[in-house]
Length: 107
Image (cartoon, rainbow, N blue to C red; front, side, top):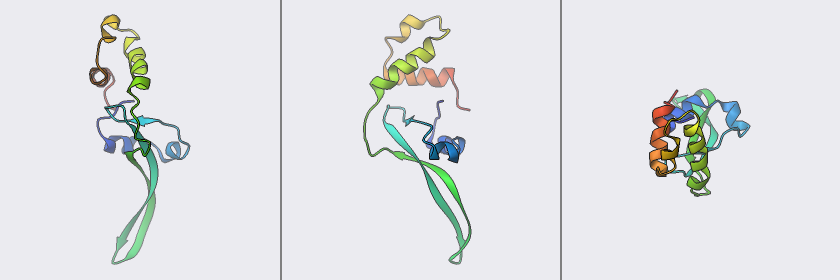
């Protein structure tokens, strides 16, 4: 799945999936991101009116770049059914990301 913003990811991903560590998440440069669950409290005059859990996203403490790991996966995804499959190999990581957004628009 491809998302244009962290807000879109946070809105789409379900709490149970984050708790079960179902997804690996990366930014458009291939850097690892962490999904986590945060307790949100709505207060009024210091009194908690309600609290609930929400999905949040942040830069990973691993601070690694996964472009080499992601590039073959994006190539495979884009080559399936593509008429210009051979041309895809020459694309940069950024160009592959852009192509993925073109072919697989955000939900």
